Length: 128
Figure (tube, rainbow, N blue to C red):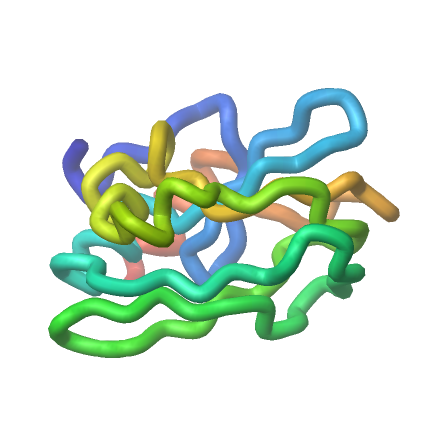
């Protein structure tokens, strides 16, 4: 998937994370734009199930051969799942960011109105 592909069904942060909400649980991952900028992902540190996160908290990191990038909580709530596959297959975060490379899931404790829609995120990365 090209870095400029922005799925319409997701919302986004200016820090290049995506959020998909299903009822009261949000799935979080990094965008293709972020994955492209990072290069080959070699390590992912995720929050623990049961952690409570607040918008803007640093909850993990994604490491590549090029750099280390912090993961910020795009929404508030309790972490209810993490993508255990990333422990052995960290590269999925970069190669399949919208599919098998999701990072963690949060039971929402608040809204998502602050997130960018696809058009706004596309404009944000066009200006980068």
